[in-house]
Length: 71
Length: 461
Image (cartoon, rainbow over all chains, first blue to last red; front, side):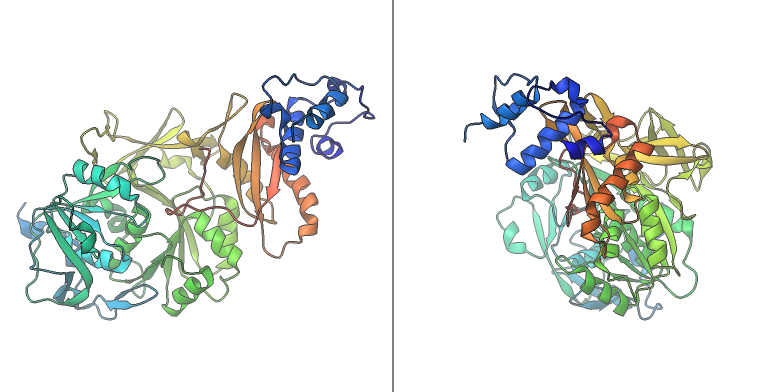
């Protein structure tokens, strides 16, 4: 996220699980990039795989979406 | 018009011109006495008035066969080497083919085509075929999926730009092209060699770029043509040193400033021009001032019989060099009511010059906004350490799609610098492009696919 923030010229606040994604300063493009990079690194995209994936609200939700992907 | 006045390719193959050849990597055939030879098995004149499918796998024999069939057959359909075999029956039907010229006659033994004529390396002929009619030249469009369209030309239309340019100064040119001569861009070069009294050095499938360049040098090539993708590939190969053509020509894709500058550095002695042509619109014009785009003064009015206008953003051309029709039962109209061919190439006026932005059909959709991948690539390619790039859309669960750029770095570039280069490219893109056109991701790759027609492969376009 730090790297994308630098590329997108966004100033990131300190990150923790409860921080809402809105407060990160990332716009939808920033998240689109993050999801695409994670898909390249991990081979998974939880938001496309799961039909009922609710859009995460916090950093914690976002990380859990990846943790909950069936292996 | 009496048959005597019909102009055919054989009229340019005078035995008075010594030392002319057509060659590939395996053989060289003299053009000086080619009129006394034939590559067609059987009696001369058997193709008279027929609609001929030229399905010869060997490019050199196909070229010689063209010179024999022109002026004899009613029409001649050129099959490019990458033609999908599944499309052949539809093409035979649409072009009303009743004869096939092939170097693989066994393949056609079960076909319903009336006459199968075998082609092989030329041998001395007894009797000669004579010009009896103006043959219609049929070519296939490239780049479309499904059955390609058949485009009808006359030899006069195909050679309009060559005749207008006049003969090359100095010694007869030795032409070469990276294209296959059964595609429009390659055929133009073959015709330039034949009509200009010069020689022709053909491309060879599967040949490495360094072997190819060594062969071009050994054959004394003076004039050479290819797409910007072909040229970038040559510049990347490091094989350009020692090769010094007099004339370097680009066509078939947008020639951006980076590739023009790269070529003028690699070939300081050469004049470098980019030509605008398509199978349908014919040769529109050539630009020789070393700059991308073309002067706005070329729009409107008429130069060498070519009129151009811009409508709905795209370049439209009316001239005697355009194709005359699409051929086939359900063929669409090729021109509008006023005789203009819509090239589908989108141009943009900036100052006193028009710039090519991309293809109308090649737009990628980014979150509902339309983006031409070529305009992004043009900005990326300007970076000194970039040799070539491709912008494409990538599906995204968040925004629908994002712009991704695949980038090939120039040779000798330090990979440890890739993070810095990425930042610099993004800064360039931000400075020059609307925000939705700035690539979300930049990937460094070692190669990009080029289609059989020499263009950058675009899978999502």
